Image 1 (cartoon, rainbow, N blue to C red):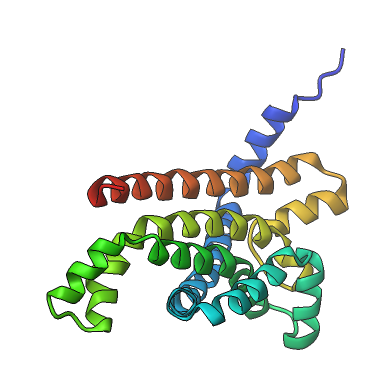
Image 2: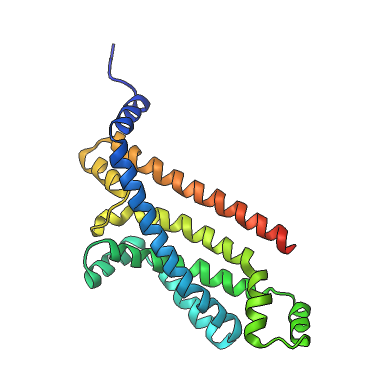
Length: 218
């Protein structure tokens, strides 16, 4: 009779024995994702605003973001590695680029979906263009923006698992170590926490989006 413990027991023993290392990799993974998403918000929201306000720019901006999104992640990371070298910052740039489209597109959609009567009411009250944008249009478009952030977060968490290929850290290190050693326990030790991060981010942002939808009445 085979006395080798099943994969679940092996995984439990490995995780409990390497909890500190796995926690460090998880925190590194989260840091990369947060930096990439933060940059995407800083750049993507203004680009979404420009797209909504200037229709002639919207097709160009959205098309450029679409091209980046459909570019194979491994190929994009390889190009970034050649240009920027290996390490944390190259991974963050890759996550930033992959997070742009959902944020730009949803900011654009949110602003263009604001009811015209609401906009006209703001204009009738004497609001300037900037006041109308920040006090009326942006608050009403937040549920759309959160939906874009939700998609971007899940994408970024998944792409971040490839960070070790270009000198980055995070849970991908455990996954690729498991692949190289043909050790399924180590693969699961990296893949399961990464999947859990994606699920937690999706649920948390989904609830926040639902709350904002209720507040705004959309």
